[in-house]
Length: 382
Image (cartoon, rainbow, N blue to C red; front, side):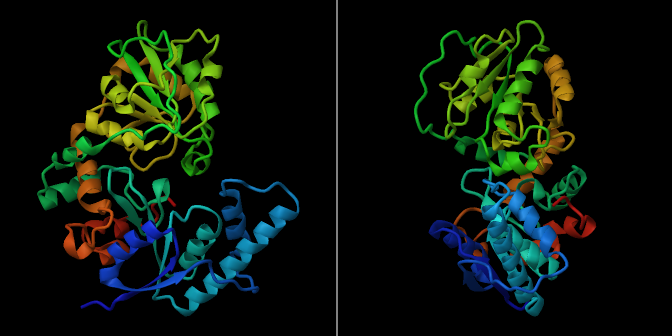
């Protein structure tokens, strides 16, 4: 039997801690930390890591005292964490999200020390979480081609359509403030492309938005792209239920065939649409349960050939709209990728690995079993 791991975890909120304990508990012991260790002595990577973590923060301080203080704190945390994992390279660093601020320098320091890492985050499927050895969202360790997924499906003999049962549990998030109806919107029966918007300032946009790092920028580009839609088609936009409303003002006096519909159910609009365009919202992935073609404009791990097309700039977004009736996807690719995500990659929240069919934590950490692709592609995007 393999030696148990020691998981050194930055302590998240109570419910998240319980989920981490449920997944990792069968595999070792825990050392919980409220904040990362700190030390004065710098490492060669200290300056670069602290600045990257600062720039990834939700509210980056302007130049001045606050920015210098924040940067200094991140440097100290990087140094202390690096020192700890240099002394304990067999311990595993664990953090929720780990994309910015203190959590980012913590995980970067562990990686630089040669320790293994596990990143946790809520998954895009109902009742699932992410447990990844390299990062979350587009920083994860998953392959960016269909071949490893297809090979896994062929070897394991899993039901290639079993993932579809998850679709029955997908529901829209209730709005913080129910919106007023917007008169004059075309019927859902007319041909349209659906664009679900994201929360302004979300890390998915800030870090992985590419040319579309703000919702305002994305809407501006959608307005221009909508002009290229075929006659009789329109673009339908819905604001995120947790975001302040502002799109109506942007669309006032716009003649392009683009309409705001905050009242119709998100997935009713997905189901009625001819396709979905998003920066990198989880709605893009969820749209696959409705057999809709998807165009991703930002960086997201599932935007691989056959799963979804990409439109990373204004020119390609406009060109995609002009060919909206031709949007498509490859069923075999989707079956393989979605099956892997369902049966292997996303553990169920609150379910111990000893009582589930999910792969073991050692598989994820060592690149064995269904995670053998980690050995094949050790330089997956981070």
